[in-house]
Length: 70
Image (cartoon, rainbow, N blue to C red):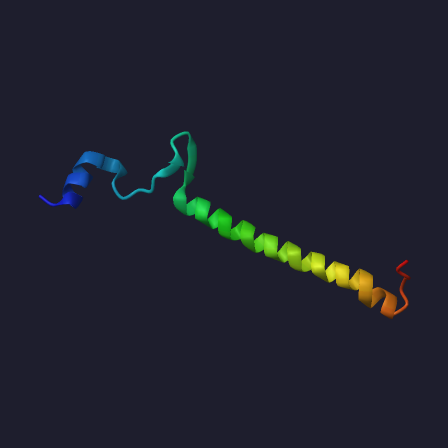
């Protein structure tokens, strides 16, 4: 009997299903990885917006005479 068959017999219905990160936390490893990817993308978007606002405030606005930076 192969290892896969032995594992299937021992796990029963849970065979082939992902395990949770922690037993008391209903989040799988794939869901955790997707959350990390999404939050990383969101962080980079936030950094880009912060840079764009800073450039507008410090360079573009005063260049067009919209306001003065003291």
